[in-house]
Image (cartoon, rainbow over all chains, first blue to last red; front, side, top):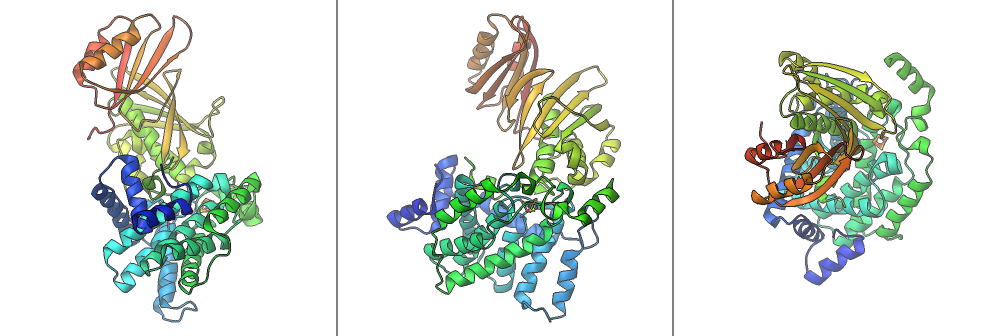
Length: 288
Length: 223
Ligand code: SF4
């Protein structure tokens, strides 16, 4: 049985003297009746697929609607000039988030994490950090377990689909997962990664799902940037010793309540939010 | 309950797990049930599949699946051209299906030797699907495990025949469902099995009285 709460996972960590990622891996091995090594191998495969995916980006492609595709290349070129407001590392994070979002919209291979629409958040944070600071690969795979474990708790208590809970469930969850994962990479404790996740989720709570024309393009591609930058900021806060005054489990429950109350026009129906804007209507007419 | 590789994963070609990855799976399961690549495929898209399918590549995805591609195949965007090269004719049209889930597709597969299979399936998200109609009869299965499908006359003995044959081959039944249109009419048995049902067992079943058609979905089959 997967963990129903972060508290349940923490309890196991304390009882068995293991780290959070290990508790997630053990649970996976038990649940699917596979060996720990096989679970690890499969996770390594997911990590490799993320690395590969970023590198397949092609700035010359555009999505089927023509709305997105070149953003990753533009950001990369701008960063290379060395004058970004957010600094070089954050510039790379932003470029990678855009590349993954564009890859997804342009029918390239991606890893849904937790969904295809939010596929850029986790690799933008983890892959960029890995390449920048040369961390051992094992640490990154541990971080993937952290992200997956957090995602599983969110899936159990709330949801991971925009159609069910708005974009807070997709980009929001992706951001919470990435915050916890990078916190682990930086040597944060299990409590710190929980706080990082809680802060990331709170910052995106209420985010609506409003894809123009129902397509995973606008605002989805750029929202991956929001999710990634937010994750890093939340992780830095947690590593600085700042805590979320609301415990993670209660934040997830609040997110569920917000999602339940969210109007259906704001849940992937392509009706409300920016999907309902004048410009969106024009784009749709042009596409017909 | 989702396992961690439902959270991180699947590895897939974008843009949508429900409208793209799930659509590839629908086509692929159609092909596996048909037993080979159809010579002609008629694809009907319903609801959200019809409304946003083009932008999500749902059409290309279903054709890709019928050609034997998996959801992470980089050739998915080019599936129309590949179908032409491989000699598979197809049409894709929107269609209003009664009481269907918004992400539903109906596929009619035909071969030159006159074989025909009609399948209706829907995408439930995360790249997962359910088949809910087969040759006009209601069924329900995911296609994630080995599945034996037996179409038979609704008459006593058929269920026993199937379980006896499987038992003889040492095959363990995971789940078994029976669906029928009306009493004494045509019925379908959907049996999810732990092991692969060998060709010989399928032939044995085909020879039994009352059994009209036997199909086996082998999830591990390499093409
Ligand atoms: S706006 Fe909707 S479709 Fe786009 S990323 Fe967010 S949840 Fe997914």
